[in-house]
Amino acid sequence: MAKLGRLVASLPIPDVLRERVVAQFDCFAPERHLRTDDLIALAKQHDPDALLISLGMPMRAEHVALLPASVRVMATTSVGYDHIDVAAANAQGITVCNTPDVLTDATADTHMLLLLGAARQAKTHIHNMDGGWKVRNGFFQGLGVDVSGKTMGIVGMGRIGRAVAQRARGFDMPILYHNRTRLSADLESGARYFASLEEMLPHCQVLSLNLPGGQGVLMTAERFAKLPRGAIFVNSARGSLVDEEALIAALKSGQVGSAGLDVFQKEPNFDTRLNELENTFLLPHIGSATIETRAAMAGLALDGIAAVLSGQTPANVVKA
Ligand code: 8YV
Image (cartoon, rainbow, N blue to C red; front, side, top):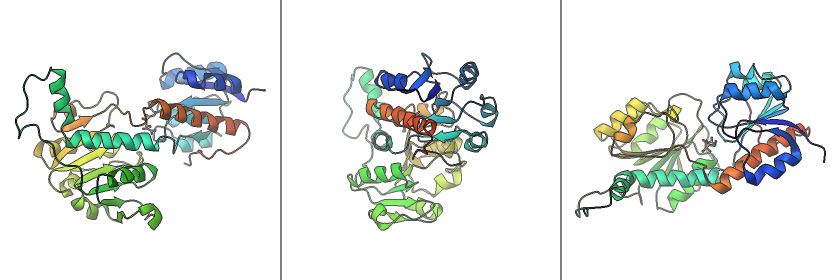
């Protein structure tokens, strides 16, 4: 079979996809993740038709401008594309693809892990076990708060937000949501819509961020102050949506009772003051990190590349 074109990847190709990649592309992939500058250098060396990149790789207008004219498609192994200047890429004739749907369940599962970990003080208890569990907690020591029955407000009721709602219903949690547009009754599944985030916040015993990044800071000191005192804050979306100074202050004062975070303003070198607080449960941006899901994401990114190089428009094209 004739190859579809030349592919330069910024990440190693996993074994499960190697055969397919070799069959479809002349592929130049590194042994370990590249930085943007190294990817651009590799692209200049091989004049590829396609680039496969991932989330930790900013592809701003100044980077796009340095790519060789041969590049026609760039796929990111993430659903989020706030690291890419899509308009700049499109202006240079480069189609951008992402990986929606295939990571919805894994990310929603991680979200529930964050919620439960934050509510039940998992970090403190894990620390206790790491130390060999020398002393049994007293009956009223080491207590978390119930998750079951608490009201959850979801900001961003797209695929992942809805999958979180579905899981939360299993915990008997009434669901509120704020979204740019109201969903159909079918997709709402009983969730209550708030056109105004400000009006929803005072009702959220749990506040869940499930919207894309790239739209500035959503959670400010003023908005944290509108939550009921002791609310649980969960973010598996993007750190850029949160004023972390304001979150730290709210966690210290008890205004926010606990926070489960998978994402941070700065990654990987996040603000470690967040981890010094007892009432946080933190993960290193592992939302979609399962064997099955990561293979599906890489596969979908490659499907997008293959489609573009075959003259088709794939479903996973990102719009600027
Ligand atoms: C990842 C994500 O865990 O897809 C996204 O936008 O943030 C997550 O799925 C990931 O960083 C994949 O590269």
